[in-house]
Length: 511
Image 1: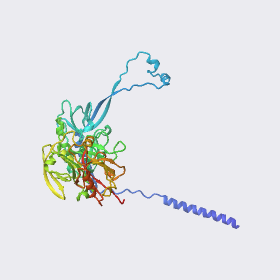
Image 2: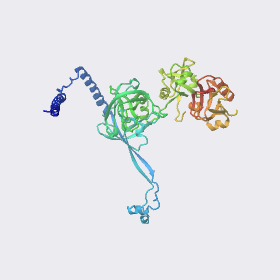
Image 3: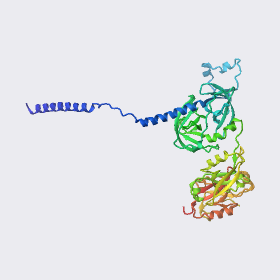
Image 4: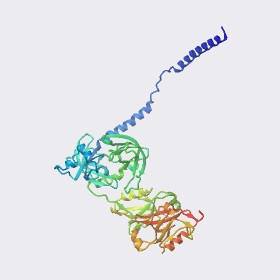
């Protein structure tokens, strides 16, 4: 056997051995091991899970009968627009049988109405709040509706009517019409101030019309407000329990089966739940719903100040240890605040014994206090606390020399990017100021300037610079001169919306 044959045989034998071994190895490696199941959960852990599950079930069974579905209808009246065919399209529409083509218009026809109306449907949820058939819900669920129907948990249907609304809190009360069932279940309001972030909750309502839907989640945050500068009274509880259109007005429930919130809104970019929902605290509703149930209007307390949140810059400027509290930027003449001794520059840190976190908290607290109530207020003034007392008023429905530039050419060497002039009778009338107001009026603000960055606008009235009163150009220039070398300039600025403090970060002459 020659070398070539030996080589061929060797290759054949080697391939056969490799194949056999390889197949054996592959088969052995591919062979599944015996299937083993994990051990069952520990008995103690399973017991705890079942107990928690039972809590959810019991809460749902207790609260669901008090939750109703609300169906609304609104009649929208519209005027039918006139319509004429573009030139050359008459034959096209005649071919497809349009009754309004020129040929057919020659025949007698019944006149088409110019006005027409259509029915717009809506839906939401509500909470039975007393044995008389009053139901607590959101204002936006029942606002301007023409017809309301309420479906109870047991499928009984009632007509209903709106008896009271409060758009500022988005709360409303409706009432069942006709004979009120004697077996009407009533929800129990809990203490929303006691809820803690991380606490488990249930949301009940009719999302997308699916009545009596229960979802579960936790309290994600407290004291939220919507974005966009709303003038409403907001102190939302943020939750991650799924709520969707139709949930509005339904309850947010704690594990004791008590109502701690009224589901109201979601934050989303897709038109449906995206993990962030908001509920109105039950304590906000507690004092309002009895007034609405009687058809009354909600009266709110008035302190008579304009306040603003404390930014880190304002904290430094006023030498405060924290950004908590509400900075007073205006005290209205003859107001409860003025009579109590509150001054511009005070920081309100406590209201009726409760710490003031920010403007929202103080605004809600004052609004939630009845007019005529005497309240205790603690302010921080010049680094020291001062206790004051005020008797609240009632909030009305409608309440709230030559031109020079402060530039590098000013003796102070600072550049603000604004032009000011003395307040004259003409400019006071133009910008809505009183004849007794004093200061310098802003006539020009340069784009991209420190003044623009601080939020100064044409028509603003500068009344203070670094807590120095400014009544004319001379005082304004002198006050600016005293800011030499400072990184921040504190200004008190008045506009039609009231007064506010602003921090201007000037460019120095060397910049």
